[in-house]
Length: 311
Image (cartoon, rainbow, N blue to C red; front, side, top):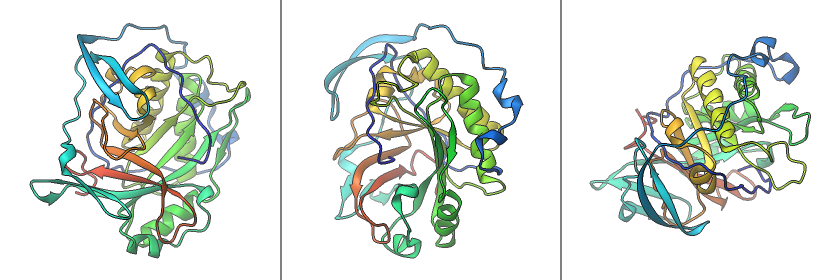
């Protein structure tokens, strides 16, 4: 998603997802992490979390994951399953599409950051892009974990909007506590100011391939609670919260039964999605080519039969 080498540690928890709608409402501005309020740093969810037991049905499910290979998971209790029909996917030279009963049931999108350079959004629109997920910023890998704003975040949002492209956003997290996750959601609000989002605000938490990465020792339970803390804070500001993650994290790091009230943005670079649980957005390529964007770009599809983005 952001031209950074990432790898995910398998943890001890299982996974799942649900969806609601991609439509979001609101946020607000400032682009320095030092401006984040002291209140967010002493958030009520800041206490360390203890490992918890995941509730499952006990059923063993065999999956041939494009990234992980042949795996078995224990089915989570109360988490909605993926009901997409892979026979309904089609593609052309640029994008993947999904249909239901012979009618279009998807929107096609990209996700971008300052790494994408200067974008000609008129060309992007004409190429067939319906939505864009824009990076707002991120948190550093080191012990200090300072936050930073993406220098092109607001200009990308404005440029896409002017061409009638719906816009969502994401934050590249390295949170190791609930308080830091809430701080990141506060920071997103500050960056956006009065700028509104059409699509969700996504929490993109990853374990990095770095011996000194600050997330190395974050437990599966804590990772899940960080996602909840960010999403709940985002929701309090009027955003539709979303969790972005590859299948390895969704199956083995997050307890998706704790995340079932949030949108899931699933990552798997493959011809067809095989993730067992329900998701509303799928990032299926990091090597896409779209007129108006130099170099490779991430490609995404949003399922309008599941989400409310198109309404």
